Length: 410
Image (tube, rainbow, N blue to C red; front, side, top):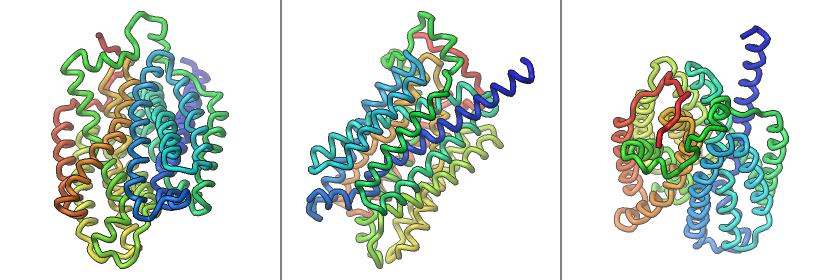
């Protein structure tokens, strides 16, 4: 290649990482905005204070179900029609849904719109990470996915700031951000690896290929299970912090919005250190082990903090966020485990199945609460999920520096 060609390729790679990063920024904003405005929005549409928790859990479960379905839909489209089409289609769908969310008047309509938004949100991260891993060199793709995660996770901070100006405005701004990003994406380009197989007769985007081989299925399930503790921390321990605060005898009401903000700032910083640790040790598995064990320490500290203040709470959330800052590493591991013809399907479904795991996690947590109370149930769930995650990680092969230009044979 000439110097001019190399320079152009480098500029294209930088632009792609930027677009993927901003896309994940909007994705996180829209994904977490409900957790942030849950109480204010439900009270705003006439839900009684006593029903805020059960109605809120119903809506978040419906949203997560949308993510599950959307993950499969967009993953298949990404492998069959290209990663770029997913980036355009998904953001258009969830931007429209967020505009609609500002005008809901009842719980069922609220849940329906969040379901549609969930379907749209499901495609963003997987398509972006797939493009980055397939475009950057095998030595540098870890840096690319790290940048995507770090910039993207600050979408949570933006959501918290905007939500202070009203829950309706939070949804409207989310829709506007999506449309603005849609225009920016007009200059993006398709993955070279996908182009190489686009016109071939190789089976592409065949979701059932993951189930046709037992070894492939186990590997796929392990990729999902290693990320479950992260979403438990965000979706239960932080989102339900007002309720945990009461159980811990907090000296003042705890704010889920502030908790989410500091948790995601922590996750962004944790992602930087996780990415650097993986590059230094040349091992994503070792990085995951370190952070999984650190997350156990942070959760124990949180659940043992009786009588905590709001100030102490946000710093604990920051600590927990740093300890579960392995999101980019976890998604990169999934992308590196499978061939080009089903990589988008895997990379899109895995993080969304982890998000969707909040449904059984919530059900199990609520069942434990009946018998053991909030705090003890928090310990039990974290212990179960961490053991499952570590066992799953032990069964996966190290993929740092792996050549990704290959296909899966059905």
